[in-house]
Image 1 (cartoon, helix red, strand yellow):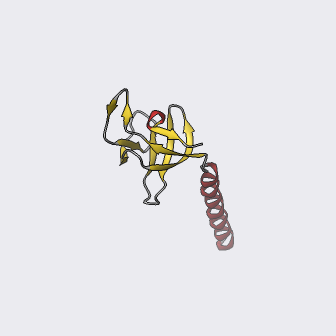
Image 2 (cartoon, rainbow, N blue to C red):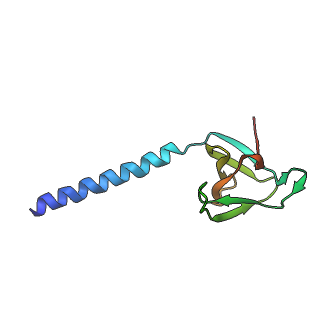
Length: 102
């Protein structure tokens, strides 16, 4: 019985690890951009990075004009972006605050 329990725990551990690895593979770079804080002729000074695109979302961090980002996911009307300077800021922002690089 102990051997069966150990095998079951090992199987569950491996299955969880594969799901996490798959999620990381699902979010890959799709492009690069620069943050703009200008919208409708008004400078908002900083752009919110949200934890999700749902109505109950929370602000995780901010970005300012000219910051470089890596675009990880496109979820209309948002991009999931990550700071290109490696400081770990990551979240969803409205697409109109990202100028795409070619």
